[in-house]
Image (cartoon, rainbow, N blue to C red; front, side):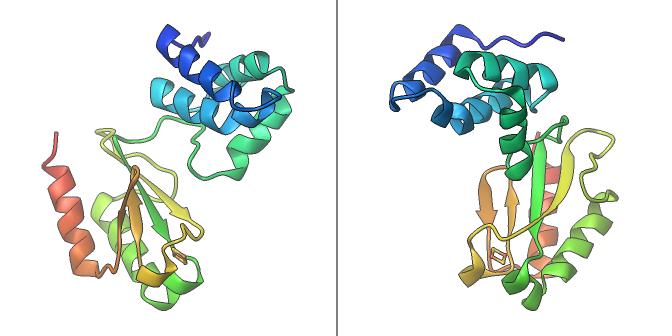
Length: 160
Ligand code: FES
């Protein structure tokens, strides 16, 4: 299905482009805006961004696959990222990961049937000092325990 940015989002991208002498550096912002509008980065999104920024689609795809914040398929309303990198791992990151998996009944990069939750195991998210941590969409939850994670999931389950 073809993808087109809304007028408003196109303006946002143009504003980003105007910050640089060439168009390419606006790719991260353009992808972020696209994901906000479309829910995920489809091939059509990649083609459209490549066209707007006058860069090869392969390079746009390279950025998408490099950063964990971009998704290539529709994720849940609450996308949960669990860090299992060294600092988090040493402080119980895998206990957290397993608890979330059990509680939601899904595995890495899966989405619950009701589309409410999706799950992703990720590398360091820069909060090592407050490990272990998870992110729910763009919000960080830090210094976690298995119990705290359960509470967070419960409250999200009850959120519409
Ligand atoms: S290792 Fe988990 S946030 Fe850095």
